[in-house]
Image 1 (cartoon, helix red, strand yellow):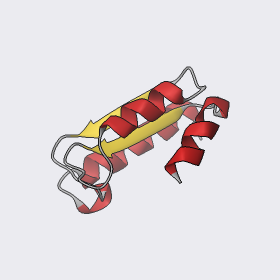
Image 2 (tube, one colour; image 1 turned 135 degrees about the vertical axis):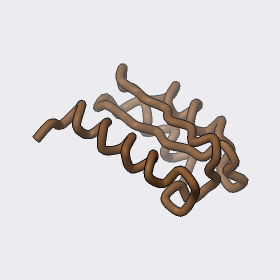
Image 3 (cartoon, one colour; image 1 turned 30 degrees about the vertical axis):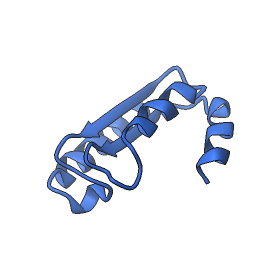
Image 4 (cartoon, helix red, strand yellow; image 1 turned 120 degrees about the vertical axis):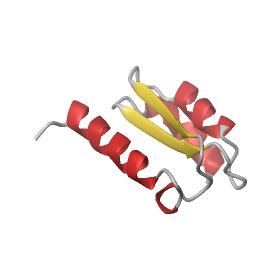
Length: 79
């Protein structure tokens, strides 16, 4: 789980997008920032959805979450 992910994050050197809901009661939003700091990538984007909880695609900001992901992919892997 989370402990193993934290151990592996320093090995991740590709661009990373971390999306998290500010009102997530399952995983604290601080985890998003911690994982960003632990990552070996020099290109980490943290996007916190202020009106969302744990399931970002089922919350009020779902369209923004998708737009952010599309923009991230377009920047880093243009077709």
